[in-house]
Length: 136
View 1: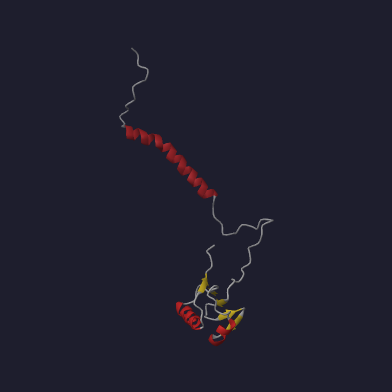
View 2: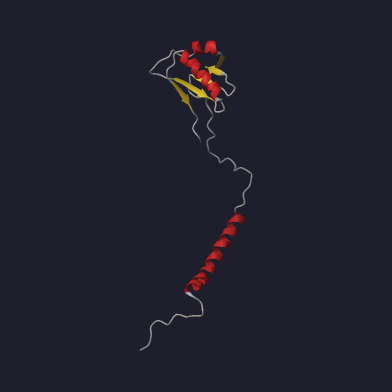
């Protein structure tokens, strides 16, 4: 009786060595593709040109806040710089249903913010809403 399948060649190599030999051309191909994309895709420092018909970046608008606090600790109400005494007079009347909205600069120190919050508490503001800027 003749065999339909020839016996496996045993050229002195084990199964693991034969699998490694079969994977070597695939590894070489992946390496060459990697080298091609590294050379072809060089990065440049030049920005891409503006495409026609694209809208320009949206303009930064000031937040809808009752009180703005700058990094240097300056208080602004409707664009007017105020001090501690005139601040409470310029702010809207305290209302439990409508908290006071405060927009503070991100580099404002906690000491300056605490001083402001103590002044607002003395002025009758039980609730304040600290506005933050979302990350882009």
